[in-house]
Length: 341
Image (tube, rainbow, N blue to C red; front, side, top):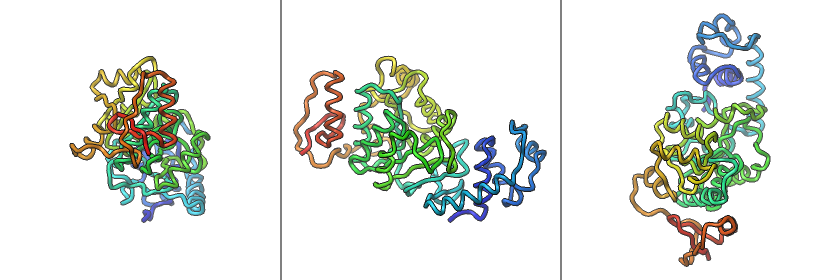
């Protein structure tokens, strides 16, 4: 059930120069959309304690945008929720700067079980890419929802792995809720919706992806989850920003063994040196989330029990294993690989 002030909140979310906590402040201060329209620039500066860079302050424009947004969201069957509402994800509400508005497609957005965020570079090694897919399979088999950013590379691989076994997936986007970026991720996004997952964004419809959006959305990726896994990240990777948010938010942080080597693993190694636990499969994360010392669920459905021997770690061998997983001919159990029936 939406707040009576939903038009006010939708309008505040259209004010691009406001920081997340400033939107929350004004949401508490103003009683209605009309209060916003009457809110002068001097009032705004006094309330924020700073002078916004925007020279023009015309709150009636944001009011009109809010009315248009509501009509469009209703027509397009795009859902939305506000901070402190019942369907707003509880873990996200606890972070320092939660979004005032969350737009989402699919659902439900609020989950009963804990979620795991899995992130990494857009240009991973073949080994890390394969392990990301495997981790997604293992989380999906254990019915642990996977949160990632729908970007190329690690994000897409972990989503595909989770979806391959019917697991719940959540993708947090750095653009308006009505589009998918990059275009190469459209099929994965469609699969997420088909299988009951959801696409999430704090950005209103029509907002194009911007470079600064992606660091902002990373706080939501970690904020939704109880644990964060960095598969592989170079020194300046956006995944390290997610890791920083995870630590600030009190989330458990893990790094994957497959992403500790070479230049693309410099950031991952740094996180390990700073105390992040190294994992080789999903079991330690599942154990942490559930507090259950039992063995993880076998991924991949029916399994013949015949272990698949991998001779060497060459790029060709790893690529072949990834192909087998994509074709559902290979299952993963506790970091080992088995032929599926």
